[in-house]
Image 1 (spheres, rainbow, N blue to C red):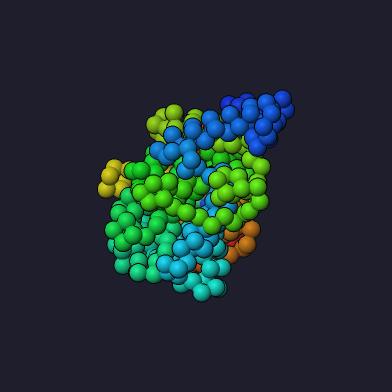
Image 2 (cartoon, rainbow, N blue to C red):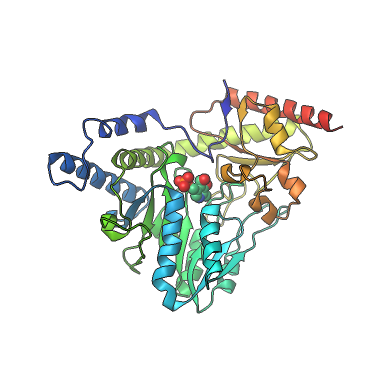
Length: 396
Ligand SMILES: Cc1ncc(COP(=O)(O)O)c(C=O)c1O
């Protein structure tokens, strides 16, 4: 059986999540927009889910807009704010290591008459590799800046950004802050009030929920954030995102986030244990392998870890990540983000750390998950060591 260590790409649906969703495909199939009892039943389920999700991130229910996932949430946040605040300015600030679901909409805006500043992060040889210094945000923001977008945790190297400090810089300058928290929800305490973000994207399929459903948090007070809708029609979601609501998906997202929040402390301890064990086994079997991204035990100033507990990224000098993956078909890992692996380009995140294209191509990303076991981790490390030896031998 193939061992799955690619939980940054997606996660299996937790059976408890599936159980909660199933009735909404069959007997409770109503459209929440309908006035009859079927509609009412679905509407009640959506209302309860919205409440649960809002409570899990410290928001109010009306601040949650349901979407098809984090890609749509990021697009809605970036395009929705810029369209609405266009008159205030045409400058956006983000980071080189963001996900394509942020970088691509920014690139498209730059093709219009927007100016985009992409900030640099700490280089590969720093114990805080990938970390964004909040002072860079302060320096980059100008009078014409209409939005800053910074992810909470990176999907390749797991680095956790100092969001509260970044938010403080934005607030001081009256600029809105959007955060892509896709990889962080369920692995770190995420609270929109503590972070003081104005918009926040997340998705169900990274936290043991279904694919194709996510949400955007949109601040409803201090300040009220207004968005230009990007999908229009029936005026759903207070006219912020039209389309019949994905009721089973929304129920799944709510159940997944509730489970993740309830068990967060134990889950983080478990994931950290698995991840640290994997690192230990790999580094002892392949002595010249190098950690990529922040140190595993580094911490932010307020005691939050600087790296996601489930993330490990390792460089195997003189190898090629794709070749390594082919040499271990029974281990599911990734040689970059799921989307960049399809493009055959070296990871833009690793390049932003200052790695060469060859170095970036020799890295593997590991993401441990809720249903992995220590035995699987031991076997995975053995497979990695054997694959590295095989690929190096072939290259001689
Ligand atoms: C950081 C980050 N943002 C956004 C996305 C896109 O999420 P979705 O697949 O829900 O559109 C992903 C997933 O690949 C991600 O890791």
